[in-house]
Length: 262
Image 1: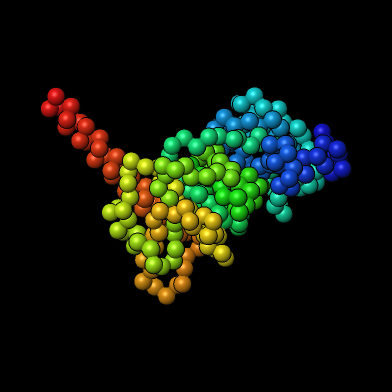
Image 2: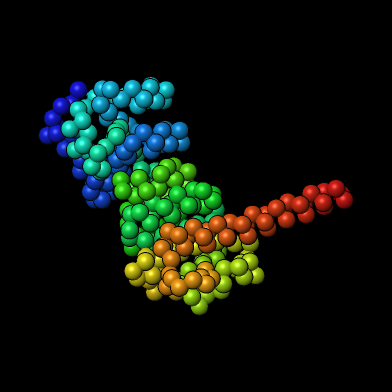
């Protein structure tokens, strides 16, 4: 039982709220039963879980996965948590370093944690991978993890990645690009698609804009000047996923018909 907020181990873990410490150790903190359950179910490394003695749900979950639980007081838990009224538990997560596996990719240049987490959640929902631009927020910060609601554990997330030469890079702009409903006429299905989502304040930096092959815009008949970055990314990602899915289905049907003829 750890009772003191000044316990050396607690002080050490508290430093994981700092980006430099996360980079140095390759670890971060996750908070709450949902994120812990998602991480364990996905087979991610969870070397340490801290919970109050009365948190029987966490203890049962960790017993199922063979993870030890360290008992702490509520005061100690609040020292590690990133929220004002933490539910607990707080767990240490080993940050995965996957390679991008040839899927379509959301390329994020966003600095706001809520937008970043929402876009990672979007990528996981549509089966895309995620690449972080060097101007983006740390995707493994506790704030981004909370906003991602478990999406981090269902998508490959690569830090400071560059689109490969064979990728077709799509950029989003509020207006002046190819209208989203017409995008199917401009996309090459034989190439992976990398969709850049820029920061709300600065948009897509010119160093990334030079890599864009195709600009697209969401038709907005209303009076709003633009959409939130997370909302725009979700709309475009969903539309491109539909195009990709329809083309894959058509290819499968054509192969099936050809096999019947043979």
